[in-house]
Length: 284
Image 1 (cartoon, rainbow, N blue to C red):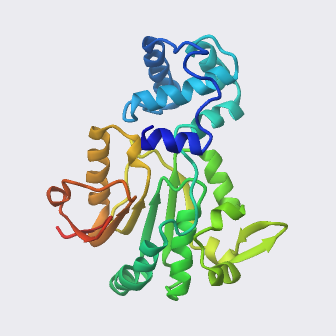
Image 2 (image 1 turned 135 degrees about the horizontal axis):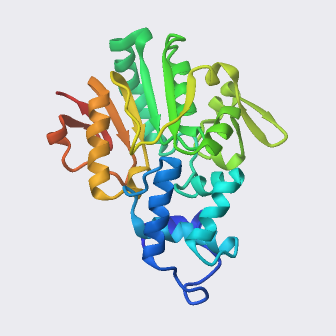
C-alpha cells in the first residue's frame, strides 16, 4: 500500500466499496466532469493527480447511487451542501496544532524572532491550504509567545469554504491537540464540554480567505509561507509552478516551510537555500 493510499484509508477517504464491487467509471466521463467543473465553478482540477481525484469523486458518486458523472454533476450544481462536500473531498482536511513539534520549536526559537526583528509591525505570514485552521492558529500562538506587535498577522487560505467556516469558529476536538504543549492549552484555549476553543487574542491575528492555489494571484512581500502536506496532491508541473509562485511571493530573507514529505529539489534555481530541513530561505 502506498503512503497516499494509507493516508486515505486512515482518514476514512476510501469507500467501503472494493474495486470488484462497483465498476470504475470511464475516463472520458471524468474528463467531461473536470471540464464542466472548470466552466461552471471556475475550478481547474487539471493540476491535481487525476487517479487520486477520480477515486475520491467516484467515492461520492457511489455514495449517492449515481450511475454517471453527469448525474453527480447535476446533484452538486443544485445542492450547495453536496457541492461543499465535493470541495471538501478534494483535499485531506485532517491536521493538528503544532504538527511535527520540533519544527515549530525551531520556528519559535530561530526563525520567527529573526523575521520579526526584520519586519516588526509589518510582519505577515501566510498559511496556504490552511484546512480547518490549526496551522495558522499555531503561528498566531507563537506570535503571542514572542510578544509580536498586534499588527503582526497571519493570512490563512483554502479552496474549501466549509473548512474555512469551521476554522473561523475556532472550536476543536481533542484529536487536534495531541502535539500542543499543555501550557499553550491553558493560555490560548477555553476548554468547555470536551471542546477546545481558540481565545479571541489568537483569533484576532488570523484572517481567513478563500483562495485557489492553482488559479488565484499570490500576494507579495510575505515574511513566511507555510504550505505543508498540500502540494503532494498536485502533478509535478503544478508543484513546480506553485513553488515558483511561493518564492516570488516571499520577500528577500523570507522563509518557506513545507511538509516532511515535500522536499524541494530545484530550490537553488528558485533563489532559495536550505535554512533547515523543510525550511527554505529566499536569498535572491
